[in-house]
Image (cartoon, rainbow, N blue to C red; front, side, top):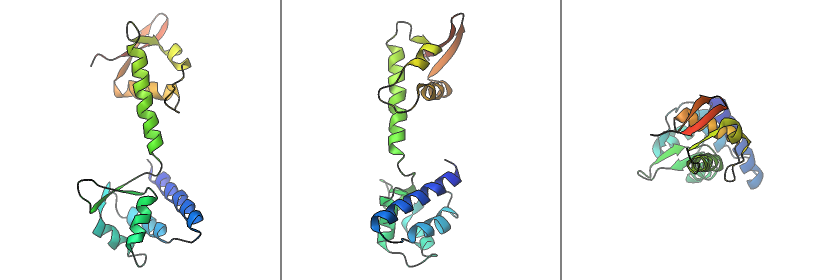
Length: 162
């Protein structure tokens, strides 16, 4: 995700939380100004998070809980004093990608030669993914799980033997 897109996600989440709570919450501004701008690692310790947030004002445990509930941070399972930076509401998108990949590969594996023409595949609709078939085709071809072969009837998509 691009940095500017992540900042707009933070802005969107802060507006949504402020509408629910009916108050202005400065912790999102502190998070954007002091934490995100200075910390480019994928994780941050609780102590470092609190010290960076305290540059904006008085930090309480409720502020960290608010960031976790908003989907901007997730706790690590191995170390409870560490947090991963997270993308809010990314779960349904990742679920759609995973289910679409599995459905497309399953569709091809059920065919006799484990292949179909690209034109035929692009016309099909996936039941379990909100994303377009073309997205999944490009994703799986790029990852090497599917490959394309030129044929007289057009481009053929096959399951890789790996």
